[in-house]
Image (cartoon, rainbow, N blue to C red; front, side, top):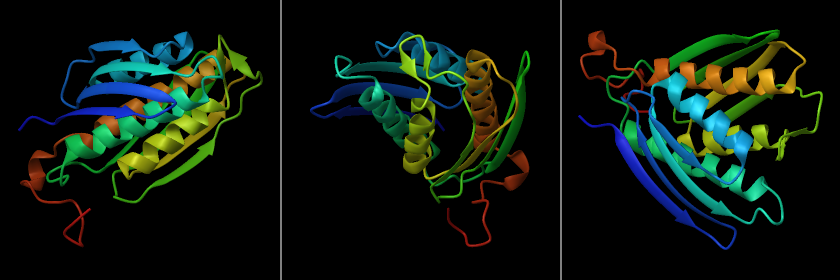
Length: 196
């Protein structure tokens, strides 16, 4: 079974094309026009072992908000499509990732219920050309469209670059675990309700 998705989304603010393979090797091609965001999405693909191709053109002459949020929307939609009915998946995943002095934990449930708990603080407002408030917007959009419950919690750290990178890497690792096929599940849906 090929767990892949190709999503395109065009609005008056952004135009995004995205291809996702859940069972990849971490190969990425990312072009959003926002250098630091590209760096984070590359780390996300690599550490989740997701093959990820993202091309985004947005109204960056205004700011990066629409582009970052809309990439989160499309990536979440791609996860939801690639997971299909979630038959045989592990469902839950967690990871705690250090990045020098920073430590961030991500915990995910591919539950069919959209929720983000975000407990991450940045000591500076910008990283490169990216507003650090937009990391929460990205993950809110992702969780809402993947229909996932995601908790991202900063345990330590003050360097904004390190904190952001630990957040993306831990989220990717948690999602990799949750999306993995459990050979003992015998293709069943991992819920007592029979659906997710």
